[in-house]
Length: 373
Image: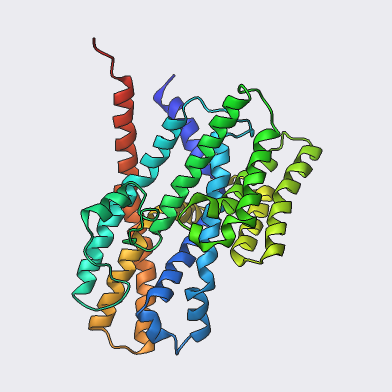
């Protein structure tokens, strides 16, 4: 086979992507940036008299945009781990390690950047959003994605999400492996969705009602599980009866949880899961606005990681060098927003992608190395 023939399928695959997922990720990332700009100030404090309703909404309700990432993460985890809903994994530790090396290396770099940004910002302003110099224990806990459960203060806004995403993925891997072992890896297409539905119910009816659990996977499994169920329910190979049964398993615990105590974050998670159930598998080509949407969706993790230190430095610079007039500070917020997107694109190109390639290359070398006597 010629080189051109081998490259052609990859090029063709790059032309079509899960456009709706990229649109949701891109939109949620923008709201997260704006939420942190509005919540952490101090530029937003000066802009509030000019746009009080908008700043208050961004500083409060916009935070639930993270639910979009939780549901999508579950949706894509089901796609990669158990696309047909069958339990059973031959290498659970390998799957967990693969997820760690995908999430952790760029997160560690972004954490170091956040520590440096705090040091720089501290020379220009005094503010609660600036972290004190980190300790080695604190950095080590971040590197292991254990900062939340060990009680260390996060060095960057949103650091908690990376740890929770890893926990949720690990929980799903272990569940698939255990259920597979218990059933002898027999094909039982209804069993794993039932296990996940029970997990969603327990999460929404108990753990998610207690903020003491917000450093642990069970608190968030309701949203993540809705994404898992959305993938399995949208499988076109299932008959209408199976789809209706899966949809009921998604809706009943979610609606029951909302009736017990309405939570806007869970309502949003349910809406996103329903959208993914209906249209999440549709692939779009690179036409019209889709190239930009796919690009923003593709760099969303890097934007999520790097935007806070960027916003912190811009906040400090506008506090130190720019008048406190609302119009000037509003321009500062727009500057921080645009700089966050630019930094995310650079971070994706020069940190996230190269680190991913380097780690996978090293792992392949280790696996391929022959054993010596």
